[in-house]
Amino acid sequence: MPTGEEFVVADHLAILVDHKETVKRVTARMMKEGFAPLFSPAEYPEVANGYYAVSFCDPDNYVIEIYTCPQE
Image 1 (cartoon, one colour):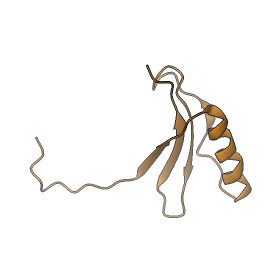
Image 2 (tube, helix red, strand yellow):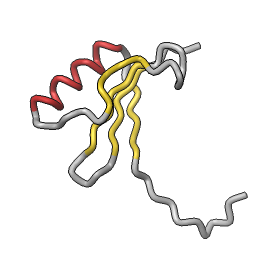
Image 3 (cartoon, one colour):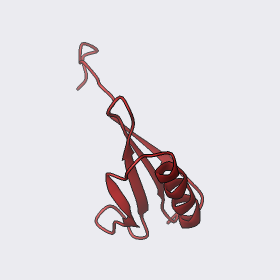
Image 4 (tube, one colour):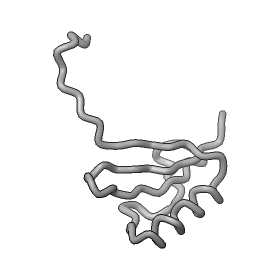
C-alpha cells in the first residue's frame, strides 16, 4: 500500500496511436531526425495480441514508446 513517501521516477512514456502505419510513420520521422530505435518496430505478442510498437531514447535518456494495440 502506498504511503505517499515513495520516490517516483518516470523513465518511460508510452503513446497510443491509432494504427500500425502511424507507428511506421513516426519511426521514419524519428530516424530522419537522427534518432535510432532502441527496439525496432515490431509486433510484441508477449505484451498483448496485436501489440505493435517502437521505442526510442530521448536526449535525457527517457524511453519514448509509440504503440498500437487492437481493442479487445
